[in-house]
Image (cartoon, rainbow over all chains, first blue to last red; front, side, top):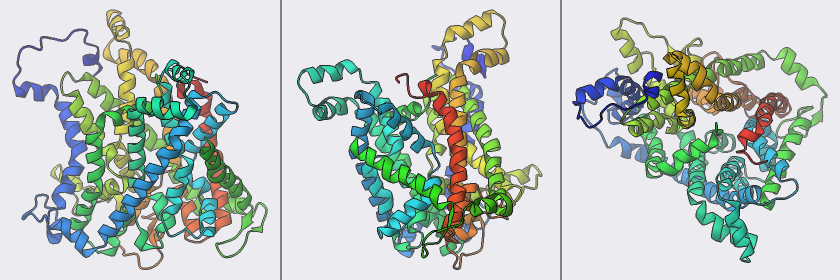
Amino acid sequence: MTATVTRPMRRGTTVRESWLVVVARNSVAIAVAVIFLAPFVFVFLLSFMTSDQALTANLWPATWHPENFLDIFRKFPMFDYLVNTVVYVVLATGFMLLSSVPAAYALAKLRWRGGNAVFIVIICMMMLPPQVVTVPLYLMWANAGLTGTLWPLILPMLAGDAFSIFLLRQFLLTIPDSIVDAARIDGCGEWQVLLQVVVPMARPGIAATAIFQFFYAWNDYYGPLLYTSEDQSNWTLSIALSQFKHLHHVEWNLVMAATLLVMAPVIIVFFLAQKAFVQGVTLTGVKG
Amino acid sequence: MAPAGVGIVVFFAYPLLAAIYFSFTRFDLLTSPEWVGLKNYVYLFAHDPLAHKAAWNTLWFVVVLVPARMVAALLTAMLLTSLRRGGGFFRTVFYLPALAPPVAATIAFVFLFNPATGPVNGVLSWFGIDGPLWFDSPDWSKPSLVLLGTWAVGDLMVIFLAALLDVPKPLYEAASLDGANPWQRFRFVTLPALSPVLLFAAVTGVIQTLQYFTQAAVAASVASGSATTGGGISSTFGYPEESTLTYPLHLYVQGFRYYDMGYANALAVVLFVVAFGVTLILLRRFRAFAGGRL
């Protein structure tokens, strides 16, 4: 593998190779790709089967049943779960941006006493397992009468999200200080600098952070389990999906249709915003 | 910055201190905390076999899952750099599983590895191999979850890929001129260049694995055939035979199934101490981590 990495020169690429040669040269990559894709393909095929066929080892739908995707909405309150999830995702992402962008700006572009200490605390918040503070937080929300709902997961976003602040800060550091200083010399206040200079320049970073938050809330299982597991009407899709089989016996075809439905938005958003997203993933790693 | 300041106090500093205080008390949702001194900790360390089992399960994941993911990420990233064409296509394909929502991915895997009807054992039987019970076997449930984690390795792979592309090409050329074989070039050029990224990945991997919850919970919930009649969602956690009961799951069950809030906080404080110790390693490498400034 490394041999090809280090090959100092490319051999003539102008000669058109037959596709067989291309396949042979990339055989390892193709094999790995097949393994990575197989689970998606199986979920897809299963979701079109009858419930009887889904219980067999048969892998190709004998007859195709796209109505399975309607059945999960007809037979179960999937639509309610979808609405709950969308409310959680949209409000959490919106609130996070309102609070975390200014916080990240303060950490990246303002010099103030205690700034470093606050940043260290934010890294600790990001790193520590959420389970550590779960019980006191739960009691707090129980006192406020909000357990059983998704508000305990949405409202804290108004105070900022540690991971988002961290990621936005890393993006904002790439904006040259000279630009910020120039805006200040031109008489901009800090809010003006932030809204009219920094935010437009940081748009890809803000987009990536928003996508991360969207994925986080969409995928979140621990939060909704903690706060809504007793109140089925407030379940999100992830909780409903995890309980689907128990509530509705073994209709694997419908379970798989619901699984595909939960996967789809994430994958669609990824393809729409791939560039910003990959840049964001890379920034979460340390620069070598 | 002000809201973030409020956030730090209300959602972090206060609950952390409260957790420490509560860990010395006994109470449930209806009674108020009653001071019991070190009783919860004595119970945790000396008398709770489930806590030891849960700690062992989590340690198992730290020791197996983290290296497995790192090796898979490094191999796939190196495979991508070796491609002469189609790198973008394969990068997307390799990355895709990392996008699958954990609950959905876990359900898909439980089905794929279903001992009777799942395609994995079907394929194994072509080769005359009698596949194991996977998520239904106490011996195989954790390895099955490792396979799931290794499948969804794309996030780590993208980070390693960026680091690999940053390794200066002349280093490889110089090594080749000195007669280094591929293994030596990997061992003496690639690995040292990647070491900060590898360290970062190892530490964050350990921290993530200490909170390993969703996949273990959902796998247990879906694989256990029995319908949950009463007992709530958490009644299936650990299936089969507590083999997937990770430490955070145990904490959750103690706190929110048995409402043993004081004891759950003692478990939380121990988790905090361990996780903080690992985080300190990261903070010591702060300069690299924070991107230069500071």
